[in-house]
Length: 306
Image (tube, rainbow, N blue to C red):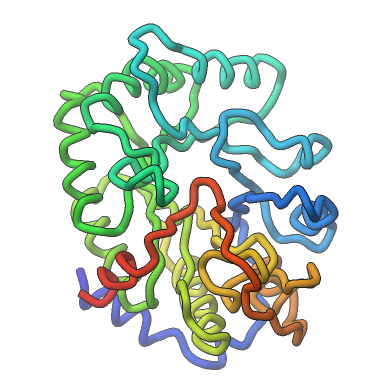
């Protein structure tokens, strides 16, 4: 599998990387900043290539309440200790009943990770119990179910294996979400490992960036990865983690899609299907924690080179 993904990577030429590309697979990881509400308009503008979004929550964001073509994907972020709670199921069913196009859901953000680094930090057994009660019933509504979005560390594979074991055949996931914060070669290898482990499921890349890389490397990573995702048929959706200003980026200023002034960077414009802007992001002026993100950058970059 590793040789297959690397050959596909080598076949992506510099000429291909320089072209403006559009893709129906692209979505938005929505992490709004209340200090800059006007930035929200960028992602659903007439020039945006994005077709779907998620916000780490069960209900759609008010910023996109009038965006009928911008599909919302609800997420069950964590799990409570209650054995009777059905609030997530009820919320999603209410959206469906009101006419919303809820075709997919995401579940359990980085359950193998610590809550201090953006993970939900829940035991696999509790997640399985919650899935059977809160998630599986939505299958009957025609909703496709995303497996828990574990980290890219080895603990992620172990947690996911324990989860499906605890499910005992009662958790029918349709696709596997992936999070990645390292270089492209490591990303391609990790995708191959996930595909080899779960060959009957499609893959979504729901968080990814080359955390801490310089501008040139960040741009190269973005172009390589987006071209790669668009070429692979079993990768059906992807969402770059960078929909914020460079001054508040926790994955490095050069990975952000907006400059410190709220202008689209080259990566931001490319991601929306446009041309390079020449707008250069500045270094972060302060450290900010963004809910739901993978903040253990050092750990993830470490695993990317193994």
